[in-house]
Length: 77
Image (cartoon, rainbow, N blue to C red; front, top):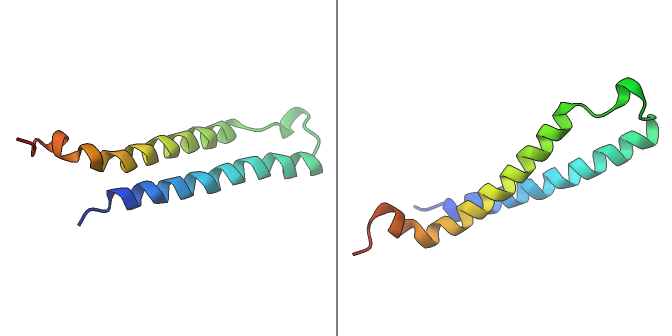
């Protein structure tokens, strides 16, 4: 069975939830704590944005891969 498009769909859903979390987190964080000195966002926040961008790219790849799967595997004559 081929679950490649399902994987792409799940990656899009994960990317949506990641974006929601990455937008809500700093808004709520800055309401409670002033952004001075040690309270700035760390490298982990940037890493989270990197993984979100990768999720979007991989979701696009997995959704489009079945269209070219036969050409990639060499099954087309």
